[in-house]
Amino acid sequence: MTQATNVLGEPLTTCSTAPMTGFYRDGCCNTGPGDFGLHLVCAVMTDEFLEFSAAQGNDLITPNPMAAFPGLKAGDRWCLCVQRWKEALDHGVAPGVNLAATHISALEFVNLDELQQYAV
Image (cartoon, rainbow, N blue to C red; front, side, top):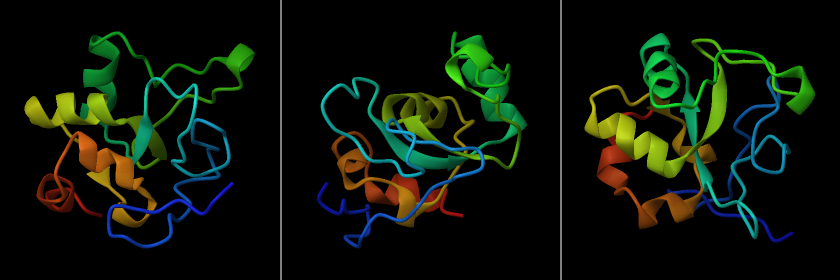
């Protein structure tokens, strides 16, 4: 796999390995064929965002052992679907973003200024 680029034009860095995240569960917000959700944004979870996501039908709090999903808590880093992050932004509950670990393809949906406002 070719080294992916982040939104800053640099090599994509790891988002999280504890919990292990990414569409490919490689710790990075890499994307490719089959990633229909576009898990591009390395976000730092907040209670507010997790509650918002659950209310939208995407419960990221409850563990799902069958899917090897540990459940998330505030402070965890996770590769979010870019459109979920944008939706949270539009509702005033966007979580923080690790720009170095956010895939450049996110810029097709949100602009760098928006992401930088939430940089951690």
